[in-house]
Every structure is written in structure tokens, then in C-alpha cells.
Image (cartoon, rainbow, N blue to C red; front, top):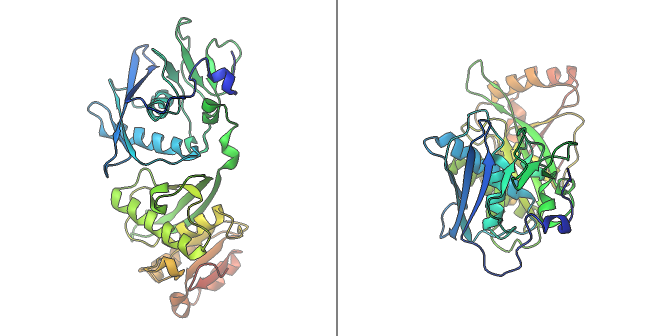
Length: 361
């Protein structure tokens, strides 16, 4: 079996579209675990202020949400950004709840309908990834596929397989592996609800350089899996904080992920901003984790404001902090921190800074 890696290889499977007109529809097939064939259909229409991606599966809303998340993650390493069209993707049947081999077919259908590949008649694709946002296609679950199918499998070539393999999405256009150009940073913030489930939650920002970001900065920031209100808040927070940088706008495609997608409040904002600054090379990495709690009504001015729940959040941070961790809290909290908070952090090898502005540490 051969691994597809060059434009010449791909000219035989998914040649790059050279025509200025784009297809209105594309279809990719995938073989399910029971041997039946799943059809993925993607259609394109003017966006007209609608969502950029809409996905549906018959009778299962959660699967549609997962499809949308996969598509938005996979778009992260596309060098060009175009938000003029809406893509609607559907499945004609339901895979089993633990199946993921349809993911590659959904990604390919989305790319084909946007002109990033030309569909062949009855193109079959099976593959999945835990890191679509880096462009890596990690593997496939299909076994004993029929020889006569025009089949594309995710992952590196495996001896004995007769199908073509796709190790990364860059190979679709004859490009190198895009994962090396993705810069990611993860920070933590306290999730406090007053119960036994209080914990530190991570937020991860991944940035990828893009060449034609002429629209609004917020349009290039994606946060799949969050509700629309939180997605908007995330975009506005990062766009404001980058305005404060002076040179942070119009340069990146940005993807934001949270360890938990259901939470309330805005105390995550400082951790989000710091993860973004680290990913873009604007801050130094701590030896351990960076844990932060804070918000702002004026991120464009770089200001850090206090949030609610000071005592409970400080207690949670003190109990969870480890050696090498760096704690960032609003300067408004400094005079009212619990007496044993700083000594507890020092005993555990963590450090603390109370800040009124970003860019000062």
C-alpha cells in the first residue's frame, strides 16, 4: 500500500480543482463496521449571515454536533480563510455510537464542496483522528475492505493493505504535513460551583498562520463544542486582547478548546488570553502549568478585572497547585487574599503574581 504525499499522487485520487467555479454538492462514502455503506453529502450555498457549517444526522442531534466539531477542527490548518459560503453536511444513516471511521469522509466532503479537491464517482474514505486541528489523520478501523473499491484510508501505510493512505490533510493538495506549523498552549482556570466537582479546567488555544485574513478578527476564531453565546464571548475576548498587542491582528487562524464545554461565568477569560499569548510567542512558558482567574470589560486596553468567588477559588487553586505552577490573579484581589494562600503556594513550589494588565509578566 502507498501513502499519498505528493500532488502527483493525489492527481489520481482527488486532483486539485483548477476551475474557478465550485461544486454545489459533493458525496463521499464510508464503510461502517457492519459492512453497510454510509453516504456523506455536503452542499454549499451563500452564507448570508448563517452559521459557516451545519451538520445533521437522522434522529441524533449529538452526532450532528460531533460532525460539526470534526469539520471545524479539520479546517484549522487551511492556509486560506473564506467565510462567504455555508456548508451543510448530512449522513443518510446512523453509525453505531462508538464508531468514528466516518470522520474522514465528512472532512473530505466538506473540502470537496469548497473546491479543495474534486470528487470522484463513488469515492470511499475511512479514517479518524484525535487531533484534526493539527491536520493529522491518525488511523482507520476498517478491516478486509473489498478490493474493487476506490478506497482511501486514514493513517500511515500498513503492509498488506491495498488501499491508498492519507497520513495528513496537507497531502490532499500536495503540501507537507501542516502539524509542525500549529502552535498550541494550554492553561488552567478554576471551575467553582460550591460542590465536590470543583476542579481546574484547561483551555487550549491553537494558532496556524494564514495569508488572507482581510475580514474581522473574530471570524477567524473557532471554538467548536461551545454554545453560541460562549463562542461569541471567546471571540470577542481574544480579538480585544490582540488589539492591545498592536501586531496581533490579521495573522492567525485560531482554534479554542475547553476541557469542559459546559460552564458559566467569565472567569476563564484571563486563562484564555494567556494561552493565546503563549501560543503566539508573546509570553514565556512557566515550568509547570499556568493557572489564572480573571476577566475584563476592556481587553483592548489590556486591563484585568476581578471576578467573583475569590475565597473559594483561592482555596481550590491552593489545593490543586503543584511545583512549577504559575498562578495569575487580578491585582484587585492582592490585598484580600487569604493569609495562608501565598505560604501554601510557596510550600508546594508554585509562584503567584497579581496583575492589573496583561503584557507585564
